Amino acid sequence: MVARAHTVAFQGVDARPVEVQCAVSPGLPAFSIVGLPDKAVSEARDRVRSALSSMAIALPSKRITINLSPADLPKEGSHFDLPIAVALLSALEIIPADAAEGAVALGELSLDGSLVPVVGALPAAMTAAAEDRTLLCPRASSAEAAWVDATQVIGAGSLGDVVRHFSGQSPLPIAQPGEVNLTPSARDLRDVKGQERAKRAMEIAAAGRHHLIMIGTPGSGKSMLAARLPGILPPLTPVEALETSMIQSLCGLLDEGGISRTRPFREPHHTASMAAIVGGGKGAKPGEISLAHNGVLFMDEFPEFPRTVLETLRQPIETGEVMVARANAHVKYPCRFMLVAAANPCKCGYLTDPSRACSRAPGCGEDYLGRISGPLMDRFDLRLEVPPVGFTDLDLPPSGDSSEIVAARVEKARLVQADRYQGTATRQNADVEGNLLEEIAAPDAEGKDLLLKAAERFGLSARAFHRILRVARTIADLEGAPDVRRPHVAEALSFRISAKVAA
Image 1: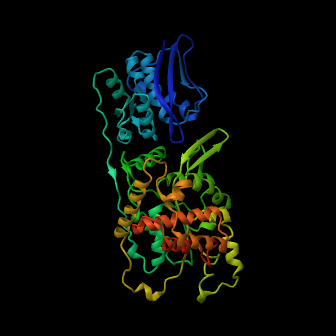
Image 2: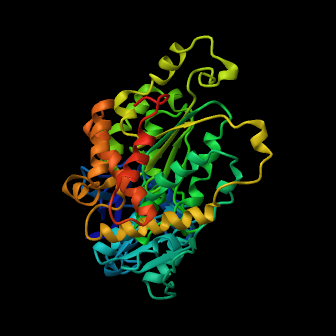
Image 3: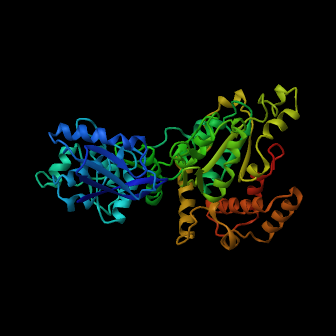
């Protein structure tokens, strides 16, 4: 007799179904696991044996074989402990076979039989719902998985609870979803003295999810401005929250099963490796660009990142997804993020400061910003020079609108875009392309004439041409204008073409 249980193996954000087969047959006593398990899965036999022993269940003196099917799919992680134990208990006729086959199980076992929380409960619940099965997981992971309301989620504290549940002695309650978290930002745009043009650029970038690069002397407020960007971004929509939480679940970043509606804000250090930024490593895990999905990726000291790391950003910026291809894994992750970069104008940082002239100008700046390739720079919709703030300006009262007021304008513009792109794969203006872009962002005659003259004068690429149209469309949305006019095109051009930021 072969007993069966069900679990999942993770490939990116997808949880692929795995059937756990258990056969207890005559022969020399042994406990073997086959089906391409990794070290953590192979060690499950010792954890399962000890957990059963703590329940006074002795394994028979027979040959026990566990097969993880499909056998050619790599199995990684400690979450296979519980399904292996369930399949074995079913083979020993301690729990009913139909109950074991009706659930997708995942969870790590302690030696005393208690269940330890594992990552990936949310994607596993999606797979369980697709297969019309119940999800059985550790109690600490159940609130996270319960957000998938298409299936029942059962949270157990120990293997003994699982046995009593399946045998009908003490059924476990259905888990309830965790809390929805929306953490307001404590940083306000009004804290930034001066820099009104930079604040305007931040508002445009937030409204249309446009990529932004800020170049300025040290201490001019680049990082301070970027840190206030989360305060003007609208909350995640339910669909976006689920997408983002799927990735966070795989990385164990969901707190107490709660789903956050606050947009991610990731700021990796400039010494981060390619695998850390793009994804990879053991098991091809998601990188910072995927953890920033539907949020912001802030890269301070942009030219200091390794050249190979910067160049890998080019394709994800365009496609909104990244394929992590390794010898033993090919995994696709979503990464629709807003890239905000900050850089000094040169190595010493004072190339553009007349009071502290750089002795190596202009070669110092050309060499330093030359680390950012032309194709990568071409992908920034907004390019901004951030001048230094004078000491006298620091004594002035706060100026400009607060983050709350700016956030209201940004949310209103995003709602306009949501209505405009309803029924399409496009969400924000930064994503629109093709005939739809020509339809919704076509400027009036004066605006078109200005754009054509600028394209010819500055040798703009086709990509730059279309990105200017997208920014102009966002500026029009912030104004509440139905059509793109010359002033919108002029402002979009002013953020694209600068004498001190490479065009």
